[in-house]
Image: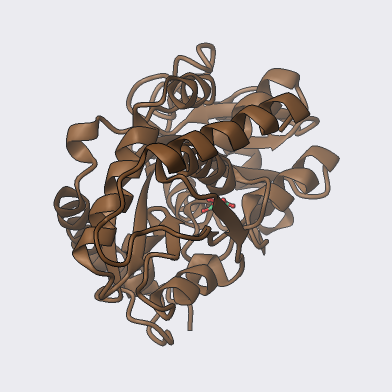
Length: 327
Ligand code: MLT
């Protein structure tokens, strides 16, 4: 953040603090709130989280401070929040992994299904199949041929079992019926550095992390994994258009608090999230990165919980049939 925007950010936090009525006895929040991002800094979850945290800070009148707790496919950060005091000062921004982790991980030291209060959905992000810029393929058909030819000689980067990049890689390897060597990172932020450097070959990652690199030509983009093209990357075909029908996945994000967080606090956090989703700066930045805030009508705790639980049920039989568990 520039010095000027830091100053205006601080001013807006202070103004909001003065404008907010107290929540009655035990006004909330009276100190900074920690937003745990369960992946490394500089990656797609971090990008979404920092934008949302900044806008929530302005609404809450207290800083929402991002803490990256990466590792083990997003389970370490989730564990931190599930086991935190349910007082509203620890929240979690997580993604589709919240729906796959309960089946992928059979031994966890937190309750991956009942350990959280839902605060609202945040966004849904397309994924892109990308490669080092000098990969020996110029379109998806050539890339598929290369994967089939080289197989495990190709390195596919991901953010660990449970990450969106892991899930997308499984779908890709199933679609091309070929295994590659997977290289796990604490997040696709650091994985992207290696893809740009050319030390890994391929990755499937969210547009929030790939759009600017594709535009700059530091990596090569092959397809988006959504049924429609993405306006931020108008020249990129969908996987179906490129010859891989059914290779489809997008990454939803939601905000959580530890189970047992009192309703007045979860309601206050939901209001701050809704304010962030209506922030024009966030909408513009998200659009530039190929995504959009969810419509506020979808950002209720109940709709978030229903969506999440339905997604757990959707992925469970697919993961069990694949027999690919983290332990
Ligand atoms: C990240 O923020 O690093 C990603 O969301 C990782 C992933 O799920 O692929």
